[in-house]
Amino acid sequence: MNRSLRLKLAVVMTVALILAFTGTGLAQEAQKIDACTLLTKAEIQAALVGQEVGDGKLNATANPLVGQPCEYKVGGYGVFSILVKTVGPGETAEKVAAELKKHKIAVSDAGAVGDQSFFSSPGYGMIQLNTFKGDKYLIITILVPGAAEAAQKTAAEKLMGKALEKI
Image 1 (cartoon, helix red, strand yellow):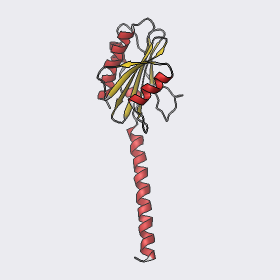
Image 2 (cartoon, helix red, strand yellow):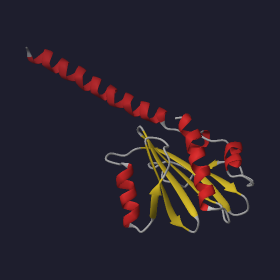
Image 3 (cartoon, one colour):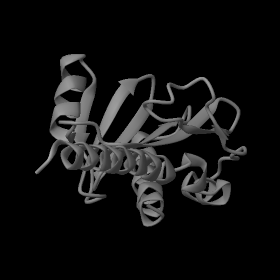
Image 4 (cartoon, helix red, strand yellow):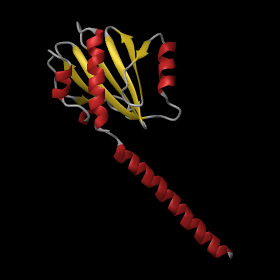
């Protein structure tokens, strides 16, 4: 093969690779999920029986590389949030749970939600349901002062199931 043909082939292959990577990047951008579209205010209010729930808003100050949680005010002092992100390289439910345990955060089993799920309890009555499904990692955080932990966990599992239906 002569030098001119090899050069043309190299240019064509380079352009093809650039287009492939650019297309992949654009496809990944298009796949980003707005966390505020996963649950409605009414669904959250129905799960958190007896609590008023405000409108959801994306947290604009969150790290955009991790994802932006959608946050809702619950009652006078409570909060509810949902975060969805793409699973990072090597990120698994087991590794995340182990890291939380290393930081003295209580971890417990969750029901059969998603591919793998577990609860974490960072303290102050807050619970988090961590769920992996395919290439997505979702976290629901609930803190409703005065609400029983069991009731918050039940609500989190119910709402996670609804959110997963939209992914």
